[in-house]
Length: 171
Image 1: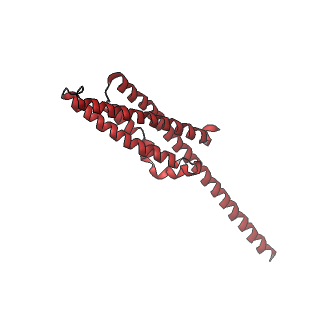
Image 2: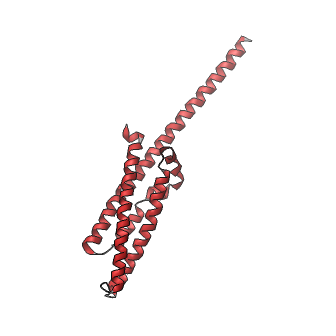
Image 3: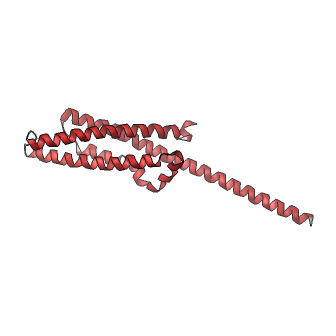
């Protein structure tokens, strides 16, 4: 009788220890996955911040919006677009909504900038950049560039928040 009680207690302890070990492994795996995802998103944000500056300089220096730079900016969110189902890993950090908001607003802004870039190009080919239409489009682009500056600030703030909360980088 005593032997069977000891065997039962031993089995319960072994099962409990196994569950604790599995739970700990899962937490470590999630933490590592989150850290890798944060690294990828931070890399994307750094690239976007650089490209925001480049697009702003191109506009200020040449009065043109280069389609290649706009396309690079659109592609600078590859980690986010490749892994949208992993956004839930940021819930614990309180960042998932910020990341979603940033990307949603950026997609919309870049779409508007691409349209205005095409309009400017068409006006340039028709030698109408200095016409009333050209001035109106330039004015629209100036407004979009102000929004781009705000988006760059949003990206910078989000980058700082993520870098501070990355447990692997902080260690």
